[in-house]
Amino acid sequence: MKKFFKTNLKDSIKNIFSSAKDKEESIEEIEEALILADISFDIVERIVKSLRKSQSIFKKENVIDVLKKELIGILDINKNEINLNEKTVFLIVGVNGSGKTTTAAKIANYYKNQGKRVLLSAADTFRAAGSEQLKLWGERLGINVIGGDKGADSGSVVYNSMASFMSKDYDLLIIDTAGRVQTKENLMKELDKIVKIIKKFDESQPKESFLVVDATMGKNTLEQARKFKEFSGLTGLILTKTDGTAKGGTVINIIDELRVPIRYIGTGESENDLEIFSLNEFVNYLIE
Ligand SMILES: Nc1nc2c(ncn2[C@@H]2O[C@H](COP(=O)(O)OP(=O)(O)O)[C@@H](O)[C@H]2O)c(=O)[nH]1
Ligand SMILES: [Mg+2]
Image (cartoon, rainbow, N blue to C red; front, side, top):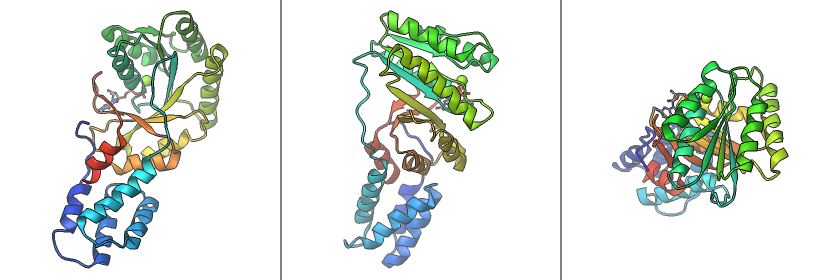
């Protein structure tokens, strides 16, 4: 996993144990370090409680063990591996600017490089450039894109995409959607409408609906995620811009709130800047 997230949790913990202190004093400093890493107060309190309860000798190694156990407990959400053994539709949702279109192109490229036949659907018909941007990616990456004109009905783009996907020899369809809808109610209606059209073709699709979240938004990152909590179809998260100023705590808060796993991480603006999320690597990176 590439170096990502600006976090100094590791160094903070090292520093805390570099001078002799009593247990309570150390716990208070750990608490502060966790909050500075942007982990929500609620989660920090849970972790601190376990640290206080911990009977083992209070030294760095044991504290790291407790922290790891707690974090993995929060982050380890039951999930199956994503496999594309059968025809698969991914739906990409999220607010404007979170990185949906870029991520749709990156995922398409990732699976194309694994020999899968991929189709992209540009269902963001709100913005003039919404559809155009994905078509440009498609041309560059050699991936077919189905789109519509600006102002076209997103439903008709999804319909055409599904028709092509189902009748041709594709493995994966990735549907990029619009994030700009005036109210949350309209946004949910729009997404429900898209899901309904997909299901008309195949009741078992979309196999995955990913919420794309910009990791650099601090507290707003969680607010973005909450907007989509009512979208019942959500199966996973994609965190973008982890190459920016984001702190790792954000990841923990979002998973704790939405209870869906993180699947991919965006680490830059080019097509290869995508990684499969690994929980153990992430936790080790954060604290070990
Ligand atoms: N640094 C960085 N920039 C990203 C990443 N993902 C997307 N972006 C940039 O974020 C901006 C918005 O992305 P876009 O895909 O258009 O977002 P959308 O409105 O949700 O479709 C673009 O300038 C992208 O290049 C990432 O992982 N890292
Ligand atoms: Mg877009």
